Length: 319
Image (cartoon, rainbow, N blue to C red):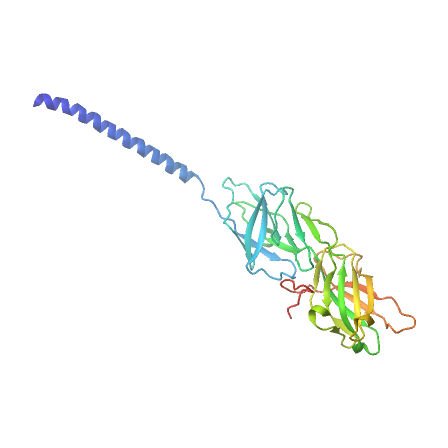
C-alpha cells in the first residue's frame, strides 16, 4: 500500500498543477478582455436640433422625414442619414454615434429627402408645390456635441421663391368680368442642388403651371370691387424669368374671352430671390378703352404664407 501511495501522490500533484495553470490562463484572458473593454469609451448617440428660418409650405416640423448629409471632412459628404424632425429635434433612424476617437462629423440637413450623389448633389422635380430647404454645415464631436444653441443647430432655410397673385381690373363694372384661367410660364421642370456651393442649377422648362382653371374648379373666379385675390401660392426657382397667361370671361361663352398671353412678371429688385415671398399684382386696364394700356404685372415683397403642401393648382392657404 505504501508503494501505491507513492505512485498516486505525484499524479495528483501534476493534475492539480495542470488545473491551476488552466484556471490562471482563463483568468488572465478574462482580465485582459475586461481591461480592454473598460478602456474603450462608450459610444455617444448623436442628437440633432433644428428649426425653420421662415415659415412656408412646411411651416413647422411634425414627424417630417428629412435627410442629413454626413462626412468626416468639411464639404465632403460620404453618407446620407435618414431622420424624422418633430418640433426642434431630429431623431436619426437608425441611431448614429459620434466617432469614439474624438474626431468631428460634418453635417448638412436638407428637405425633402432625395438620393445624394457622389459629387454631393441632389436632383428634384418641380411642379410649383415643392418646398426645398437646406441648412448650413455644422460640425460636432463627442467632446463638442450638437446642441439646441442656434450656432449648433441645423436651421433650415427656404431655397425657392414664393408667389401669390392679386388681380385688379380697372373698369366701371368689374363684376361682369371673371377669371376663367391663369397660368404661369417659366418654372423649371428639374433642378439640381449642390451641397458644396448651395446653388440650384435649372433644367428644361416645365409645362405651364395652372394657377386657376374654371374647368377644374367648376366656376370662374369673381372680382370683388375690382379685385381678385387667388387663394394660395406657388413655389418657383429663384432668379428666373416668368410670364403669365390670363383669360378673362365676359360671359358664359369662352370664345368671347379676353385673352392675354406672355405677360412678363417684373420683380422688385430685378429678380426673384430664394426664401422670399412676393405678391404678384396684375393690373388690367379697361378693355373697352379706345387707348388701352398694356397689362402691368409686378412682384413686390410680401409675407411668406404658411401651408402644408400642394393641391394641383395654387397651394391652399390655411386661414
